[in-house]
Image (cartoon, rainbow, N blue to C red; front, side, top):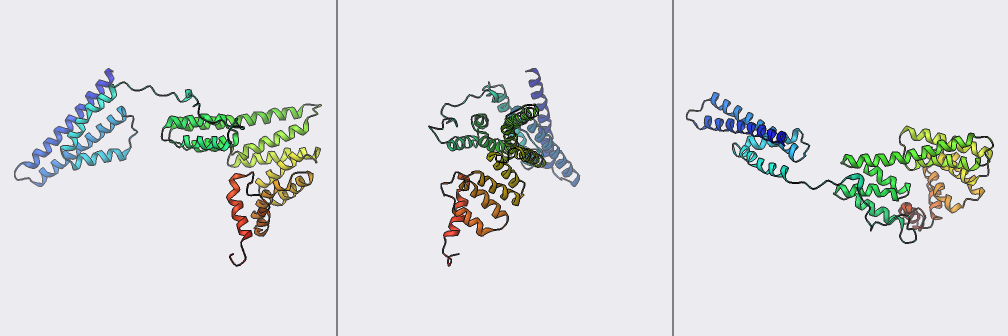
Length: 350
């Protein structure tokens, strides 16, 4: 408290000095026969006074209102003091008691961001029989868009109740939040998810090297799947994604050498190839998966994507026409409606 009082006293002294320079400048101007030299002295004294007042008041704001000021704030307060001679500085002085009262007033205890309890009315993703999963995600996005930072932190914590594919989208948005605690928390949760997949991959690799392992088919599936999920969920970005796709390809190809009729591994391999933009290979692998028993209806969206990238738009229309509008890919519903409308339109309308 003594340090606080010393700081206030120091700031008051500087403001009194600024006020004295201001009064001195006004006295120089109101005297008779004002010369150019006297006018320059008065303006210089007024400018120094305004600069002192601006700097002191910005310091007070930063200390007592926890405001992160920059040069724009200094300039703004300087302009006020400079173009409102005496009145501007007097206003600054009169504000000091209010700042002192606010700083000595008991503050509400801050909410610890790492001890936020879960609200009872938030629907959970596990209650599949009671509620649609998308409603939970939409609720959290609505909660995250609140201006209250503690509600946003709460939303980030509640992603622990979501599946990874839903949680990661909100966590990536939280990385752009202006509050440091929220960004760090989102980064920590994303990092934890990435480490979880990495540990699982390493564990399965070790199991693959053990002699006499009769579950190799399942292990190749898991390793390829985990590499794919790291990329598919955007847990890893940039050049690292290409490296993970290469590793997924490597283990998928090795697994298919031993188990060429493995449907799941074949389908994963095709998706990895599509992500790598190897469209011809991806198409052939999707065909292989279809021959092994994957429903063509499930593969139509992938065939349409390959045809689109090949600029085979007539084939895109044909593929999309076979997709039901009540598709299991809700994010693509508008896309399917657009292409289906394009197919079904009369020729003269096109």
